[in-house]
Length: 150
Image (cartoon, one colour):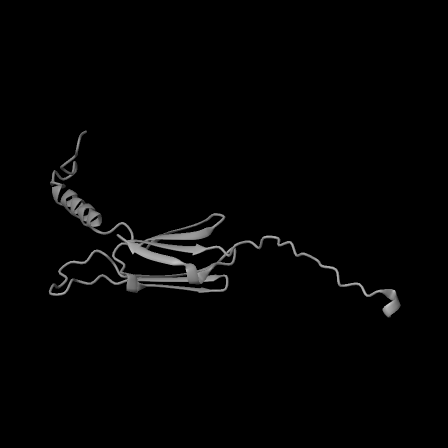
C-alpha cells in the first residue's frame, strides 16, 4: 500500500498530521467501550423465576431487591472505590446506578427466595406459588330422621 507522506503541491511532510491522527486513535482505544452497566436475563420455568445480573465490581450491600405482590424492584449501584490504604490514580470503571421494576407473570413465594452474589454475577431465584391441585371433598349424608318421629 502506498502512503503519501508529502503534500504533492507543496512538498511539505504530512507526517505530523498522521501522528496526530494516530494519537487520537490510541487515546480512543484507551477509553472504555461502554459504561459497564449490568446485563440482565430473566428466565422462568414451571417452578421458579430466575434473574441473573452481570455486574462486576458490585458488592452485596450495593444491591437492593424488593418483592411486593407481583412487583419486583431491583436496584444496583456501583461506585468504584480504592481498597483501604490506597488512592485512585486512574479510574476507567465508571460509577452507575440501575433501577428496574418487573411485573411478575405469576405469584411467588418471596419468603423462600434466594439471592447470591458470586464473582460479579448476581442470581435471584423466586419460587412460584404452587398451582392449586384439585382436592376431593367427601360428602357425608346427614342422619335420616324416621318419618314417624316428625
